[in-house]
Amino acid sequence: MSGFDDPFGENPFADPAIQQATRVTPNMNQSLEDYNPFEQENKPQLKLNAGTTAAVVQPLSQNAATVTAQSTTILITTEELQRRQDELDRKAAELDRREQQLQGNVPQLNNWPPLPDNFCVKPCFYQDFNLEIPPEFQNLVKHLYYTWMFYTMTMVVNIIGGLILLLHTGEFTTFGLAIFYAMLSTPASYICWFRPAYKAFRNDSSFNFMVFFFVYFFQTVLTVFQSIGVPDTGYCGFIVAISQFNSSAVGIIVGLLLLCIAFCFATTAAANIMMITKIHSIYRSTGASMAKAQHEFATEFMRNQHIQQAASSAVNTAINSQINTSRY
Image (tube, rainbow, N blue to C red):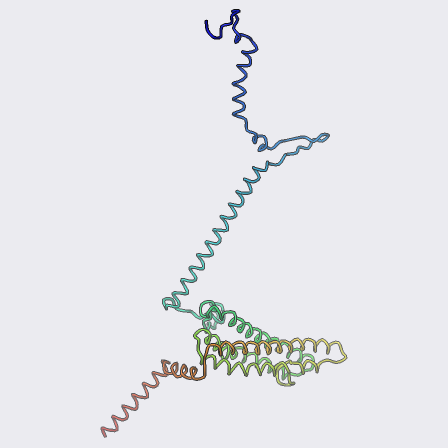
């Protein structure tokens, strides 16, 4: 007799209720294994509001939104990295070009003044602050260049002031001299004091520093005189501007316009004083002196190719003359 034999001759597993429970249990186990509690949350649910026919779509679950945000973040990051890589490539190409220019492999073409290619006048100078000026002096040289640009614009505005005086009072002197001074001072100021300062910081040249200080001192004195505005000198300074004020509305307007030009001259004079003071303090801190400037001038003078050719030609002429004299 087996252990499951009922002494009364009945089999307990033959009961219909037991057999039904036996069939349902595997299905329940399978359902529990396949059940995903996040499945219903990830699916948008469509519900109808009571009393209306509008459909409302439930938003995605928090997990799905997180995945979407991460994908967007990865996409933005990739684009940013690509942009930075392109920028680094451009900078590397620019540095390589500048290195080749410094080594003399690539000729430096003049780029100032920035004129069109088909213009009748070509650029006369090469100017690149980032390449030729040491990093610690780049901002200072740029500010000096901006000072020159502001002074040039002031001289152009001074022509307009002279034209206003011509129309208002019939005086032609200020207008004519303003045109002459603008045409003369614009290239002269660039060549005589900005270029020496540029070359001084580029080459650490005491001689160019001396040239800059000498010319820029008179430039500063000139801008102070221009801001004063003595009549019939070609400058619309304070004296000329104040003299135009009268009881009429036109006189007041003309006086205010000329007063703005006088303030531009005064601003230029103040900028010149600040720049020459700052550059002089930097120059003195480097230990430069007049003796060093004289030595540089003598060295550069003798290195000049035209000077060497002239000296060589003079020596050859003197020797030939001496030989011819000795023959006779």
